Length: 113
Image 1 (cartoon, rainbow, N blue to C red):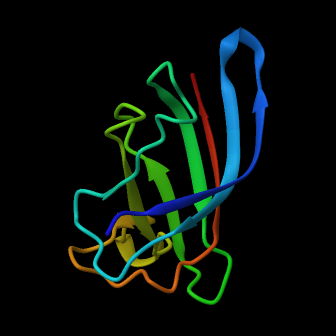
Image 2 (cartoon, rainbow, N blue to C red; image 1 turned 135 degrees about the vertical axis):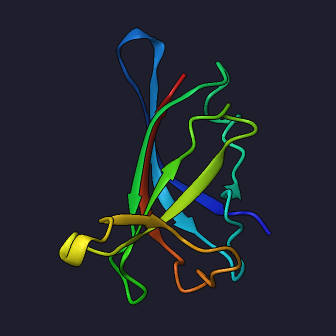
C-alpha cells in the first residue's frame, strides 16, 4: 500500500506555483526508501519544490518530507524524531517495515508546479 494524501485546501502562488495542504495517512509496513505518493494531479508541471509534514497525534514523533522526485513518481520519507542527545542524529529515517499505521491524519504542505 502507498501513502494516502487527502487534500484540505489548494491555492495558487506567484510564478505559477501552487500550494496544496492536507493530511497524510501511512500504512503498516514502511519501505526504507519511502512510500510511493503520486501528486501529479495537483502539480501538472511535474515538480514538488517543497514539502513538510509532522504527526502531532497519538503516534507523534515522526516528520515527513517528499523525496524531491517527480510529482508522479515521488515518495514520502518518514523520519523519527530522536533528539540530539548523546550524539544521536536528531532525525533518522524509519527502518524498513516500520508500522506507521498509527499515522492517520498528519498535516502536510506541498508546494510545486
